[in-house]
Image (cartoon, rainbow, N blue to C red; front, top):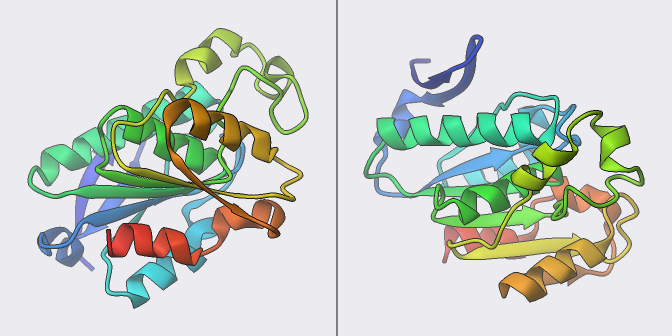
Length: 209
């Protein structure tokens, strides 16, 4: 399969199949995995990728640098900027889960995607994260976390969060949605697995909106 390389940072981090890149009529959807900015892989979003592709949507997955929120956000932003450069007339949508949802919010806030779905995101990287202080979870990154935290999006954005999420409290999404006037859909169950679930509302938001 031929690939259009969108970015090279210490090796190939992001590649778009040439036939997908050439189908410029539909928005290109970028899926962004979670993992606390320290773990995870694009394959984690495969249920969403398969569901979107079944609807005929062109989808690619982002492989960003891991380590801390600042490193991950900077890597993702750089790759999406390069993708804009390679596909200047293509609309880009994003669907991220957990830490990937945080990155999706940041891309929407920075005007780098035209529409975004953020499932179970971390919205305040200076508060308790995964039950720990940020300085413990990401040693030596407190000031960087403040910079990496997503501000309010400029692009249409949908948030999804399960009421019973024990990893990232739903209160984070509620506060962010209220402050930024973003639509939040609350699921009664699903816990944190909602981050990797092909939620019907998210599907409609990106494929029919």
